[in-house]
Amino acid sequence: MEAAVLITGASGGLGKHVVRAFASRRWQILATVLNEDERRQLGDVHDCVTFECDVTDPNAVAELARVLPENLHAVVHLVGGIRAGRLIEETSPDDFGFMWKLNALSTYLVMHATLPILKRNAGAFVAVAAKTVLHVEPRKALYGAAKAAVAHLVLAAAEEGRAEGLRANVILPSIIRTDANLEWARPGEEQSWVPPSDIADVIAFLCSDEGRGVTGCLIPMYGKLPA
Image 1 (cartoon, rainbow, N blue to C red):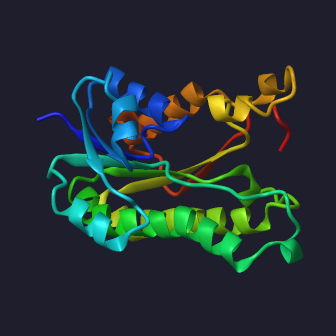
Image 2 (cartoon, rainbow, N blue to C red):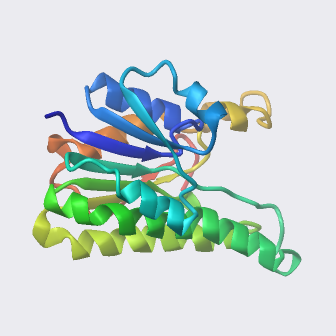
């Protein structure tokens, strides 16, 4: 039986590239979507099974866990979000709650649901955090804090699952060259950004047999932007 991968946030700007990367490598693809519109966006991917699931909702993720297949060998967690542009004293508790829920809580819930299967299968977990985890930037404090929590959770999972052969790694991108980001880019600025297909290929490698020796790593992918 072919190995299965669960991809959260699969219909997003990076997610579509990740789905294609795994499809080209003939993985069985499971994807979470929020609604029918997101499901339609993945309609051209052969053999992609979708589950309507809000991964920030504990009950929804628990329901998802009950239907995950035993051949699940990889989980790629792409769900996340940002509200930036303000100093700490200008932000609100709602800003922090929004980013904590979408980034850190979703990571915890997905890991809680899938790590038991991944440990049995010596599988792989990959999440996406952000450059600001290692290189602190002004006006991104709450986002950076939430993404730092994502990174810590994944690195802890790498240590907790090492004996079972579980691998867990974090991609730290700068600005990804997605359609959404291109909408606000100044002319030519996007040439310094990291292409989403490059990130997708690294994620697929980390989940493959060839990447089985890599675990507990923060992997910077900054494109041409300086550290």
